[in-house]
Amino acid sequence: MGRKGIWALITLAVLLLGTFVVTGVSLLPASIVLGPCLKDLTSPVSYRARLSPLGSVDLRTGSTVVRLCYGRPAMRSRTVFGGLVPWDALWRMGANEPTRLYTEHPITVAGLPLPAGRYSLYAIPHTDHWEVFVSRSTLHWGNQISATVRGQEVGRVSLPVERLSVPVETLTVHADTGGGSAAFRLEWEATRISLPLAESP
Image (cartoon, helix red, strand yellow):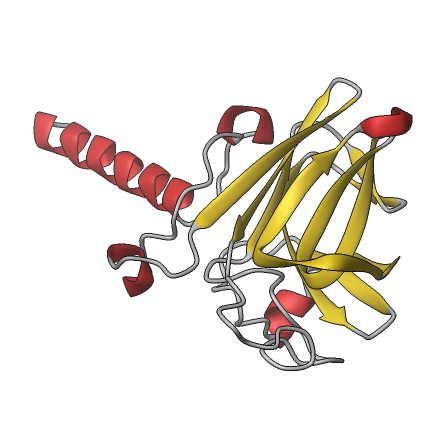
């Protein structure tokens, strides 16, 4: 193979790796790619100022680090649940890119076992509980939860709704590690959902 052929292969490898990184999909182990939540640079939204900035939160359970990446929409005087986010319909649990979960090691999410890797989360909010779905699809745009995306689901969990006395303007996820347990605590408007996590034995 000549010098031009070698440079062509190197260029192709760099382009493929770059595509995997910026779109949230990687052939590399999660322990290597666990890092900053990158924008989907294949979307025009990524080249404009965002009303809903990207956010991330890390949570440690045992020796495992789990990262949640999500878009952070604001209320802006709107009714969120039952309005902007309809009851009983699929929602991406954020804005823009899908809400993504990265784990270095096997974990359980509300009892659902997950191997190490990258996943997307979406939900069906109900007035008294949420159904939260975990999918291996991370390439789709957040609200494009198609039959193909749903076909890659690894499971679902049901979580109770907690009511907040003080409204939360911007969707916020906290890492809660108190009392010997670990959970991602999602808060927006007057709603709180807690997603418990544990390191698999």
